[in-house]
Length: 401
Image (cartoon, rainbow, N blue to C red):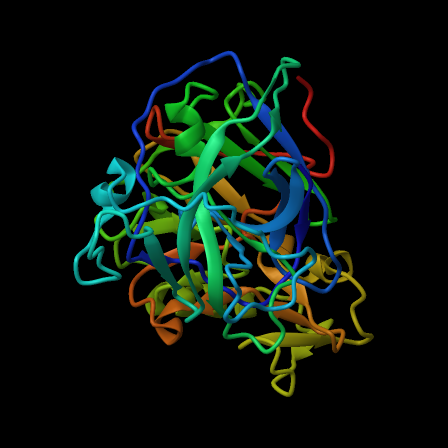
């Protein structure tokens, strides 16, 4: 599998009206790893998965903020955006309402099943007002594991025939790979079949490229681990409490931050008080002789310009100072956030702050770490031990195994 990066500001905190759930079991011996690529001037990561028999490739947006995987579907397609491959063609492989996996997730008020022989429909909405409506289907996913073995498990996913994309320039993908901590995720299904541990990770490179993996074979011993915190409003991954620090000093005195990790979000969102503290500190500590405010650049809320247009983050990062997240309940647990993990270069050649005010995105006090902050780190989600780990990494190189 191969991964790329595209997109616009896109937050995938999910409301799922219908989800597929499976039981869980495990096998430690088999792991799978994928590569990543990146398309310039676009801002989301995707992977290529093969589906069906014979297998056909589909580019899927990698999203740790939602758990249902879906592809655009010719069922026929009511509303589909432009995509790199032809829509998936179902072949009488829809799940029916009488199947335990459908009845388990059934909600009478949303797409009710009137008859046991009806197809099992789904509707999923995202925080950016995007959505997908379709039917749950089951088909083969050919996989090759690091130990040389292969498998073709039959997995359940969404066959989406009606997509609403809020952006005027929708991402050039065929669907979404949902990796959140719900039992409808591809990982949970693979785990229930005994094909992999209930562990996965990703490594997104700021230079382009990267990889993600299922299983724990490539997890390094030097990874820093913090416990997952219980989440009562969704299936996404959260950690905390954390302190937002600068030079070892806590910037936000309003208590520890609870943080959601969401690779489906391009940028990082902080609650309003934490956001204001971060912006104030960054502005106080930039080299103002080299960069000036650029209010005319509306790419993001806060932008700066240099004496000459910036060609890359490498040109601008020397004028800014790093931030960090410190987890006081875990000894030596610090996630460094260097300037390249919170800045972007706009099309105008200015540099803009990739940390946004979550309250203006209707997120309230929720704090979301988007892929900009997760760049150049191997991030590991271990739901077996209820922990999340990370370690700095050169993500454009596959790990040794």
